Image 1 (cartoon, rainbow, N blue to C red):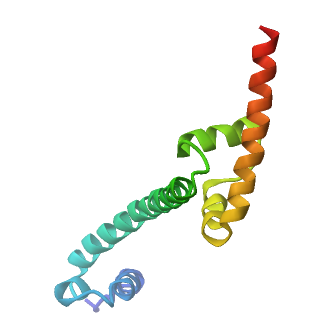
Image 2: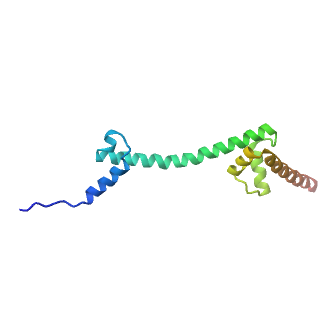
Image 3: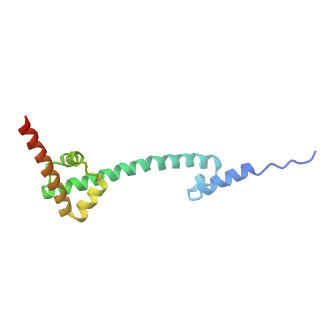
Length: 130
């Protein structure tokens, strides 16, 4: 019988996986089975941490806005400011508010004053109608 040579598909698959794991240490970059395990683990961690990154940035923006609000005495609380923004239908997300709070505090002060004027006017008209 003549010798049968195997195909190249499995070898190509393994080399592709090895390229992914080339920066790993010791057996994690050499043995196919451990490479597969580490690849799955790395991809799961990357997916999880992408979500955590979004959460962490949102927390950072909220903290920055809250710090400036309390320092300047702009509003009673962060939640009250956000609530008034939604009532006024201003489309400023937390990222933009944090940038304004850091770079130009007077602008944030002016925004909150405008919101408070509108809210106070609406509340006074509601009280007089009752």
